[in-house]
Length: 196
Image (cartoon, rainbow, N blue to C red; front, top):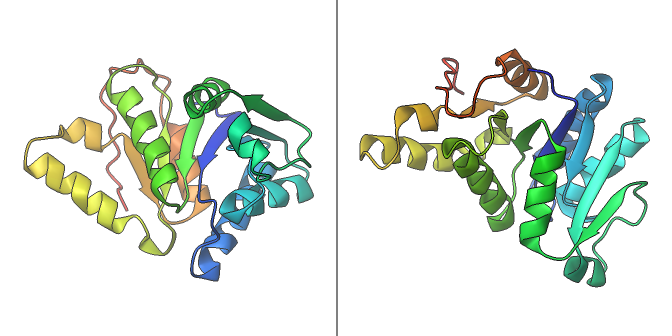
């Protein structure tokens, strides 16, 4: 699958450990090297700001999408050459999805998890067929993955829907897995045998 633009969901906090910021910078370097444009939530704080600043410093292209209400709170990255201001969080997520060929989640809080779960639900429902990856920095997402495995065991989630999420601990292997997927209809079964 050809990925020219990648949407990255990540925290508006830098997290408790420097490993998270390091991972955001490492991902930005890989994106810039592969000439993949970044689409993200348009903030200048936390991992969002670190990711965008590193992309810009490395010569990468960045598109930020932010609701007017958050821009008014002075968290918008006004240094972006392409900052798109929308009316609501719903519009933000829809535009980010429309602009992107795939999605990656870095560590983050409830907002990041909301974005990740919603875009995965859209895939499950056949709304899109774009690859979705988790960059499992310092195994941050292990509890979430355990919950999803439990949902499969308890028959609240089908195994093929669990496999929608491609999970790796480093950017290059994750992007390799995402780009290795064929361009298939959204309803097709997604198979990834090398989880975690």
